[in-house]
Image 1 (cartoon, rainbow, N blue to C red):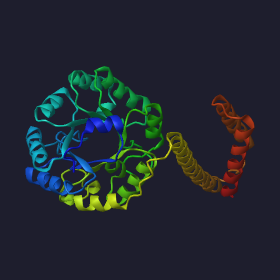
Image 2: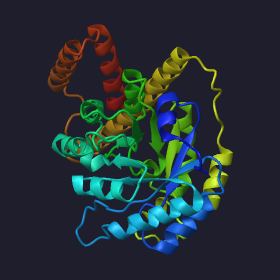
Image 3: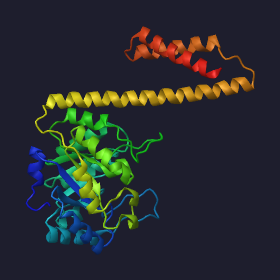
Image 4: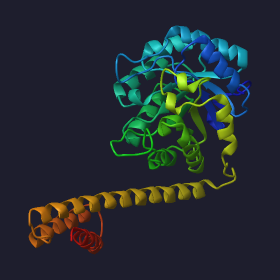
Length: 352
């Protein structure tokens, strides 16, 4: 449990795994206290999170319980010794959260995407020593993420962390938000002084993916988790599919393999870069498979309309375009030619 845990020292030293857990949305006093009671029995859980104000896509959705939920968060802290944490999106949220003694704030992905909003929050926090965690923006832009951190630093905040929660994508994926692990890896490389934890709930979107995402987050060197828990997940008003009970959270944490803390920092960076290459290779294979699928569709069309399969003039134009594009990106001309000739040959074979 979080009693005696100093979040400021953790941000400075980062010597242990931190688990932040609690309901996506604070819905009632009973729901929050029952969830907090279960979490207080798990040693690794140091912080009780709870959404008080919920930015929702549609205006008729549940948008949070509001100020009364902060009273229940304070009561949960007093009863169970857990630090408390909530999301703030506007200066009024900051004022209320601090008034009720919330220990840690986080800035959500939809807010981070807007530098004006981040600056307003930074200005409202000027002179405070409250720890603030910054979620990545919904778009895979490490500079925008870093910029939000720098705006808080510019306002004098000393205790800042980052939360990787995945990125919005139109591609088919088992995840709610694409992990794109190379982005948090890059943030870790650029700012080794900023601790990064992973919101495995928002990446997963489904309970069955939580363990896999948590293990990967550990393997790349993030220093903890934000995990949504609820005393009755199936009845949750928001994000029911990705929430689990405190009991299932304990089972999940017990199932993870923790890397040795003695791993050299440079070795970890190398491991992360190799993992990034593996992810890129997987993306390349997926794209090639999609290309071949389209080639087969073209083949069917040509057969139906009695069009010749090989059209040399078009192929020469396409190949020239790819070579010029590749060279402009710093690639070797012969390598680009070889790659696309192999792809083209396979595409033609699939059209027969």
